[in-house]
Image 1 (cartoon, rainbow, N blue to C red):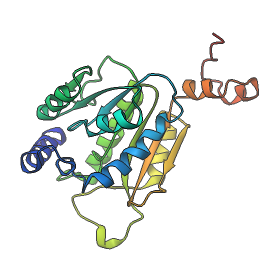
Image 2: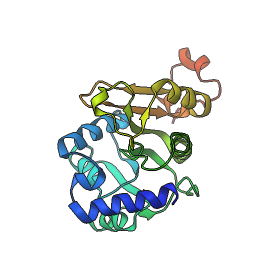
Image 3: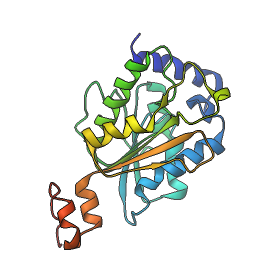
Image 4: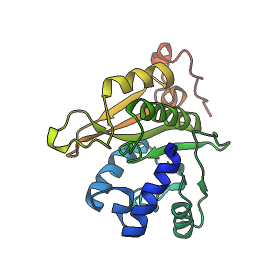
Amino acid sequence: MDIAEEQRAFYGALLDQYGDDPRSLSHRDQATQYERFHRLARVFEGESGPFSVHEIGCGLGHFGEYLQHHHPQARYSGSDVHPSFTEACARKFPQGAFHTRDIVAALPPERYDYLTLSGTFNVRLSASPAEWRGFVEGMLGAMYALCTKGFSVNFLTTFHDPEFTREELYYQPPGALLDFVVGKLSRFWELDAAGPLYEYTLRVYRPEYVRTRHADDAFARYFRSAPRPSST
């Protein structure tokens, strides 16, 4: 069973057990789920007008509900490998587009301002650590390719109490993650481990977007590979 098939089986069983509930997405409760959402959403906290957000692993659309209350100008859409989840999202958000697909296996043609992913990297099930690292890096690469401004994801931290360690979970060393991000994606990133959970959030930005936020000529030398912002 490959990773996508195992995820469909795992989350499908949780959905059958809990229904439309954070526990169907392996969250303990809504409080911890929304704590994760709050930190993911900081990737677009500077936006004042409309923008698009595409959630990978959109599940039951709980992040879309969060956006309705906290970022109503966001245009929400999503992808998931389980058809029951994308069908649920389409019912909740008929104005959005929801796709049953694996974006790593086949990169979609669409582009979005921002992409987010919450919790998918935490449960590796039967995949080996090496296989899971390959999955994580492939997903990060696909998300970077699909965004025009940035993306945010979260991980379980290696800095946690031993009593919380579980064999089927994946704990991402921050140093190795940043080596990959800076080496393969972008040097513009943030790590946020300031919350109460044994987790951290990674936010990555495209150089051309960061350049628009720092358009003064004094910063031009730091953006040699990024297009100069338009004056219009």
